[in-house]
Image (tube, rainbow, N blue to C red; front, side, top):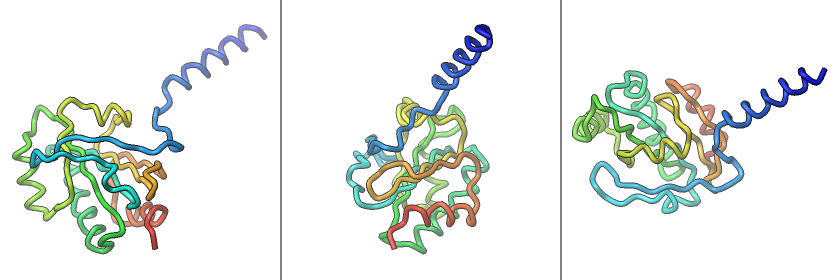
Length: 162
């Protein structure tokens, strides 16, 4: 009996340690440099729901979902923002990311996470991953893997201000 309790407590402690450290009660904030070398601070978008999209150019599902994000923004001007966070991949450059975004008419802000600090803050393990923040910048939802149009529309309905 005691062995089972000890095993259970050990399991609980491992579970607690491995849980995502994202706190959906606290307001999320981060800053960085955009691909255009401009300073960015998420706080500047306070009052507007935001999708934070973690991606990189040589990731096929990442590239495949960019047009869905662009379409979302075109359908909902001034109601939601998308912030791309570019993973510092050894296979991609900032220039290749800029060119890809230009080719896909993706005009939303993209931050180059050179040291991986933003990815670490959100415990990102999979690309693409999108985090959905409400207008108070509290986490409403998170999606890892390719995000198709239908699922994207479903997730933004939970955060968009009508």
